[in-house]
Image 1 (tube, each protein chain N blue to C red):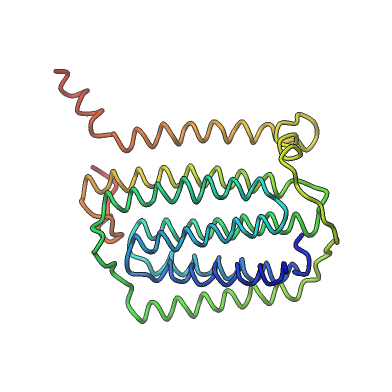
Image 2: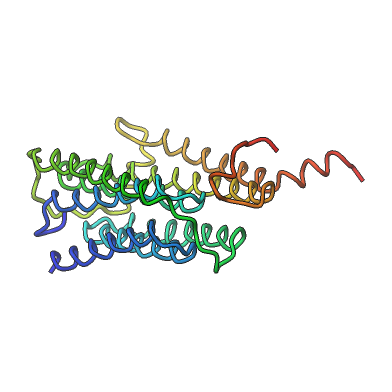
Length: 105
Length: 174
């Protein structure tokens, strides 16, 4: 745990980050921007896993191990999303959400 | 000392996160995300989990950001400004996000956390032993599943990004 810092302060910061991500996810009109917002949401949840593990159950490792799994899944998801975006751009020359009406080619 | 560092990191993270979701220039928004991710790595350093901080810096700041920058440069004109949502939609989303944040904070602050004072460092060898352990509470199975998932995602990304050429070759075997 961090000396002098209570768990409440860290959870406040991660909640704010999470909702900034949600805000971006809803208001953005661009696939890459939506991907960026998803990264923010995932990172906020990873910090929560680590912090709750370190503050409440310091002798356990479940939270810190799960954070590694979340990062691995997020990396796989980003790689696939970027390849889908590039594939879409080849088909329809756009990455705006409103132009992506069909996944057929 | 830790308090000052934590508040500076929190301020940097929140300011750049807001900048990242509101900036109208694509590439700038990615760079703001990079600052947020570095701030999160700083939190991991503060909390004495150096392995995850290194993972964060290499995988996120090194890998994912470069991947997103590549995709931005491939599909976008740098000068192009992004479309933004209607003002009414922005206000509605802001209000609902603040409402959700309020509910989160009320729930967090009304809960009595059973904090255990400690100064344990999570070493890489502990994490590695836990990941590869066969005994009770070991994580060998999820570890293997994640490795297969990463392989599948890699193959899938290559297939999707090169889809056209592969089908063309099959159609005209010249």
